[in-house]
Image 1 (cartoon, one colour):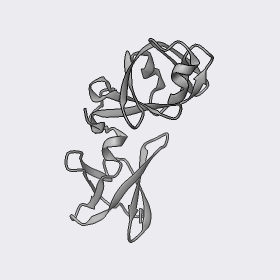
Image 2 (cartoon, helix red, strand yellow):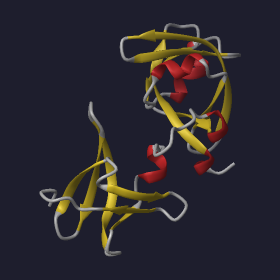
Image 3 (cartoon, helix red, strand yellow):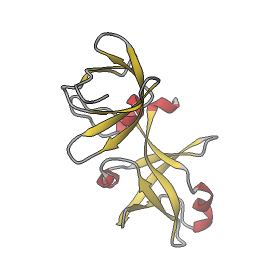
Image 4 (cartoon, helix red, strand yellow):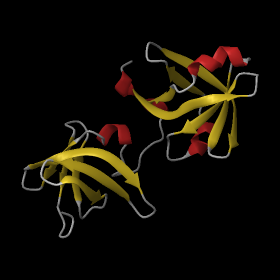
Length: 170
């Protein structure tokens, strides 16, 4: 499988105890999704190691995971700071007009007139709606609300977003 076939759900931050458990910083919208996950893929940079989840607990902002067959701290310690991935088939299903961040960050942004406006660099999650951070040559950085009035089309296949620049945005 290619890297794009996977989505990151967390990063191992440290070990937890001496019996092979790890603290994971969740990079998913809903950390409770770990309860339903049966397995993840550990990306070491050189290889992708499938791991079966044996136990899930929560501690502050972390998820504590126990993997089948990893029973002591020495077996897992070397994987600190490495991402945990899920295949797209095991990812949370999206609603209409929802996108995985990995699919839209880096996407080219065009105005409704067809002119290249910039590149989507980041997504800020606010209470009401997400805000897209677009870097442009002309305006350095522009914040676009992820609402229908502003985001007209998102084409993940061609990595192109079409936007309406509402008054006051630039």
